Image (cartoon, rainbow, N blue to C red; front, side, top):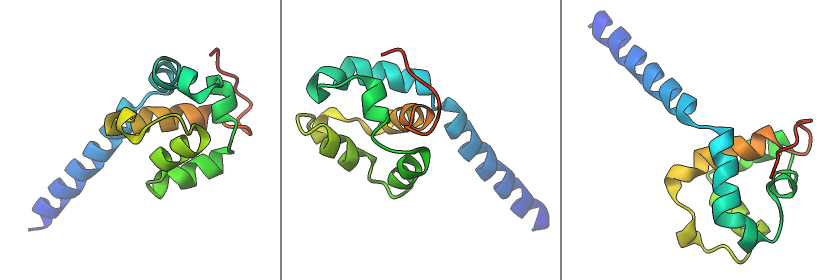
Amino acid sequence: MKLLKIALASSLILGISSTILLADATKGQKLFVKKYKSSCGMSGDKFAAKHSQDEWETIFEEGKFKEELIKICPKVKESEIKDKWIQHLYDFTYKFANDSGNVPSC
């Protein structure tokens, strides 16, 4: 029984960490440029700088990233935002938030 619990906990941790490792700020930047830059009417650096890292983290953790993207970019429709892109877009905004000290090249 104890071994089963350890195996389950290990597989859960491995599954979560591998999902996090698959997310990519560079991919998020490319997605923003390709899919949303023209509809947004702003570059990725301006979009990411709309919030601090803590603010982006809260928005993401509360499951409100899509809503925030639409709020900042009203021309973007919800159907244009795929769930599988959210983690990458979040990583991009977090990495280049207004308090990060990083500047993207888009």
